[in-house]
Image 1 (cartoon, rainbow, N blue to C red):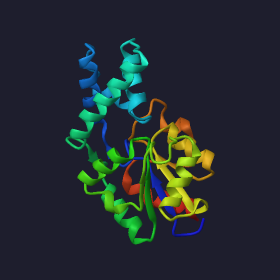
Image 2: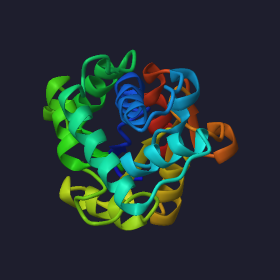
Image 3: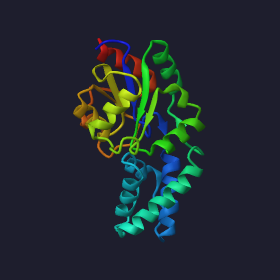
Image 4: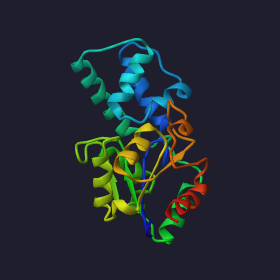
Length: 223
């Protein structure tokens, strides 16, 4: 793989530990439906498929289903609340900024490809003062497709000014491994994110347990 490469990151559970704020928003919406709050420890692995999927999984956990109009209303309520509380407890994973500094210094192009809405992704990264580090920040609504559809990864790389042939995906869940495989790019899995299936079972090309290991993993794939 030619250098410099484009390194494309998932957001929730990969760059930022967003579970506290996402689960808090979910629980606000569930409470409005008369349902009990879900504990963070179990709800964190419901994250990763976007707001609709998170709400659906939250309802499933309580053996509840709702009509399409009810679900749409819950989604609006969720997004409204979450947007106002998006970075109250969310923080970059330990070692992230140092890892991004090192990659940027070595000439890597960085981008974000997430199933979060683009404007929410940018708001979160703006509030955490991380947005300037990325050449592109693309969400499920940016191109009208979501992971694992390979089009979102291809177009994210293109928007960042990179080449798919020299791109690497970094993520925490099946959607990330799936989008990378379908787009034909290597994928690094992080073990500290949100996934119902352990990352090792998803068989990414490399697994890291801390952001300090990221550069070495990328270099081993770029050799």
